Image (tube, rainbow, N blue to C red):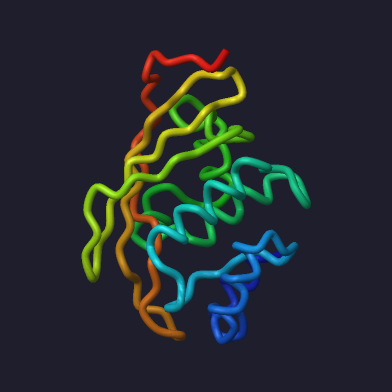
Length: 161
């Protein structure tokens, strides 16, 4: 549903971007959409929260939420959506699916680009580290933070007991 709306020009969904984004942060059932009112860190949090409960409310809804915030440059390399789903479920990213906890640490935040270190506790209790990169994309509703890349997860060697 979100992908269809995204592909239909973004206009209807992006007019309400700030409101929808806040609804997504509050745990509402409507997926969040990119918009000028969302900070870079909020975009990372939206994606991580969605992946932590990937199959709610529908199968792969979390991955579809992440896809909604994939920068057009990222989509050109990782898409289309079915390929993106396979990538996220595969080696390097599969530990993000249904993880139990995530920490976001800023590495660099600027006006047009932002980088965060993300550490998650996966289903297996292991800790994995990622580097989440974002830049602003020009959308109809205005400039919005979108993900340009995420490095494959690295096992930190830590284990939750």
